[in-house]
Length: 333
Image (tube, one colour):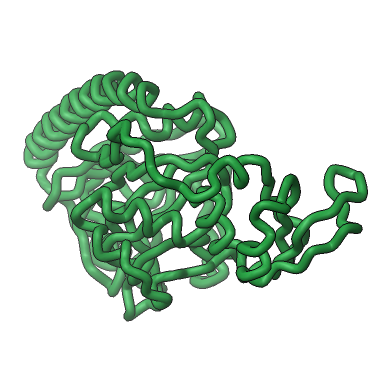
């Protein structure tokens, strides 16, 4: 036995009491009071639960079931109702034909869903290998572009979006959200190439409750955005991107051409380490003497009493606002 209490409708439903019969018409009211017609093709009693009513939507021929049907005379909102003043019934033969059509439709949909599951499995199998082959062992994040579609409903103040496509643009050796790094990979894909140009309006920092994190783009609700997906478990990341990588068009990574680049003082920079020193500062440690002028020009201050890995050590301290510039200088973007 089960009882349901509706605070909104101020009603009580006892499922041990049968309220409709087979072949009886039921009216459904949905969003904006849209109306649907159902017919009861079977009434079933389930121990400890009460009566369950099996329904057919007379328009869509979709099968459904419910244990709550309220009297139309006490209609209070969205729900299913029976006419308790003038009950309406369909001919049993019509209901039998309708049930046959509904079951055929359900079987066809089930077969189609199984075909889709098989297709997805095959695509993932290809994608797992393809993604594993390009996934660097040292990668700490995947840089991706996502095409967003607005799913908001202004009438109900509902704001949401869905991802229509995801494209893999590259990988990162760190998890920090740096917009210059995102811009660097934007040109790998023609649809996001315009995001490679600096535009502060495209830099979104929403690392708060219900926020969308850091992303580069015009809006999180529509169009293309670029963001980083941290890697915490290599196997899970491969599985996450298996279906995406199953389509080769979703991989837009610039392959190195093998030509050495002329990086100034590369050997000097290699002996330095940049770390997040605090919530408001970053620091550079190591053999900084050969590049001290560059560090000073970027706004750094030398301090011989900083703490690194539990030890007092000399280094350069910078405000957090210089992190992107330093990352670019040390080739971390």
